[in-house]
Length: 198
Image (cartoon, rainbow, N blue to C red; front, side, top):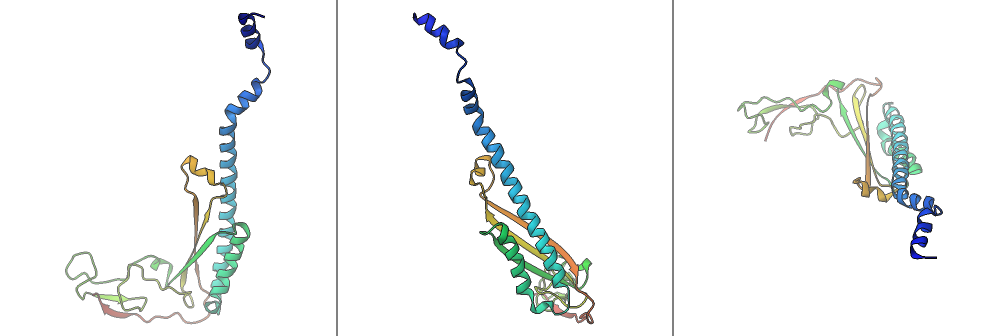
C-alpha cells in the first residue's frame, strides 16, 4: 500500500474517535462533577449547622441554661462533627436587654464633637464592664427576657481540594446567627451606671 493510500485509509478510519473525544472533555466533566459534589457537601454541612444552632439557641433560652452552656455547645459540635469530622467550631453569645440593642454602641455624650467617646466624656455603661463599647452586649447567655445573639462559626478543609483550580479557597467557612429572647423566668436586670470615657 502506498503512502497516499495509507493516509487515506487512516483518515477514513473512525475507530478510537470516541476515546479521543472523551479524553478531550473528561477534565472539564471531572471539574463540573467535583464542583457539584463540593457544593452539595457544603450545603448539607451548612444545613446541619443551621439546625443544630437553632436547637441550641432554643435550649439556651430556658431558665437554668446559663449553667449548661458548654453542654449545649458540645451538642452543636457533635452534630457538625457527624458530617465534617475535621471541622473547627467556635461559639459567640452576646446578650442584650432588647432586640433593638443588638450591635448598638453604648450611648455617650460627645462633648468635644469629635465623633468618639474619649477625653472623660460621660457614657451609659450598659454592659457594666467599666469601659465604653461599640457593642453594648455582654458575653453571656443573659438573664430573663434578654435577647441573645448566638453565633456559630464552622471552618473545615474542602472535601475536594482540587477546587482551588477554580479559584476557590481550600477552607470552607460557614456561619450561622440566630437571635432569641430568654424566657421570662425572672425580673430583667435594670441597673445601668454612668461612667467616663478614657
